Image (tube, rainbow, N blue to C red; front, side, top):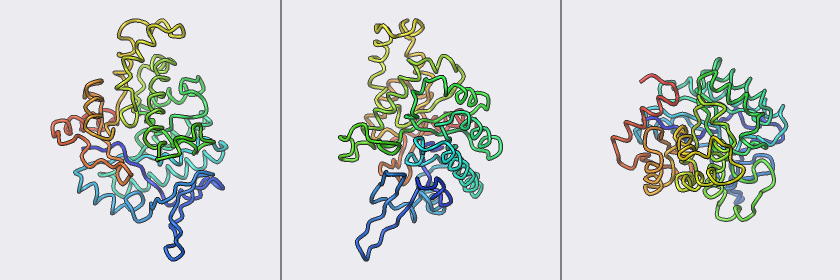
Length: 330
């Protein structure tokens, strides 16, 4: 089976964004200092990337063997999108990250593949880096955040979406924690790690609705988009989203017909890493199985050991789905 939800931390990318970091501090047990990971002013405490599958290739491959994962598609750490820093710093970091990712993949090319980091705050530079990452480095697509400073339907991003179609590669969306790229919008999410589960759900649902209601799916009918964590709450809110599009005055004419929103939702691809069997069942009930792909978030706080919850037939189907999405031969 192919795992499409797996993040990586690359040694050579540490400090590659200048003063923004990223910085990894392993802690000092003798003084009681705990490890942390810093990105700009954002500090994630208690995380230990070194000595884990995030950074150790042998540990990662051993975990893949244990979980029965044939191929894992590595993506940037959502903490290090750097979508709020100056463009030159973001371009430099993206280049360093993608070079390092391609080098890592080359060490285990039958077990690993990669998705590119992009400097999305400067869309023309993002297009250039996407083309380099795909054509020169062999990465399979791109992996970006959901809050890029401008709405996802802004015309500034149309060249990036068009470039994905031109290169025949998918585009993956995964949120960054609230507060990484600027001030927190809701301090309540700082408690109980709310930005990692509730905040992500909000961002993913907003991304899907923006891409549909803002016309991106209509302007780019051949664009393949995959949304992390099953699109957040989309499977629960799909009917409500369609009702809004049919009745609210801002809705464009093409979305007012019965089934119009549902048809566009069927064009998305969905990461099946949703947290548990009930949410998984809701995702499949809402959108079927034809565009769901398996994800584990290997070594993450919410790792899933069995992405299909014991359904061997689904595992085979999800593998086929991932190969279609990633343009891989069977």
